[in-house]
Image 1: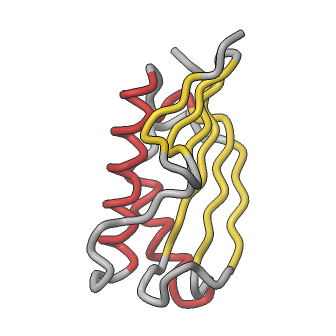
Image 2: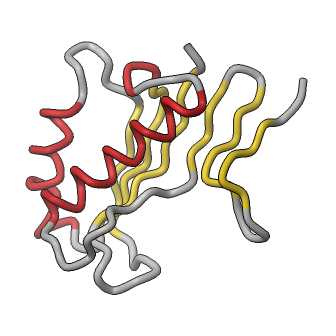
Length: 117
């Protein structure tokens, strides 16, 4: 079965599709000056766009890992946006961890695995 890679550079691909599964690289928002709610909204919009491009959507998410810069300060704000975004009955397996992220302004990063539609 072939491997499809989208938005690839020397270091990584933003999307890899293989054997009916879509793997997204860690996604972050665009406005690094924004708070947790806006960064989460932008990140989820990026995820939706990439999943659609790969032939999937947010209802097909199997697993997500959420990385927060400060879990104590940002967990509730991220969850508020997440809960509004995710359709009822489609909750994936999920882990949320605190982690130092690649840029100090990044508050949230999400890594997603989804099934193709």
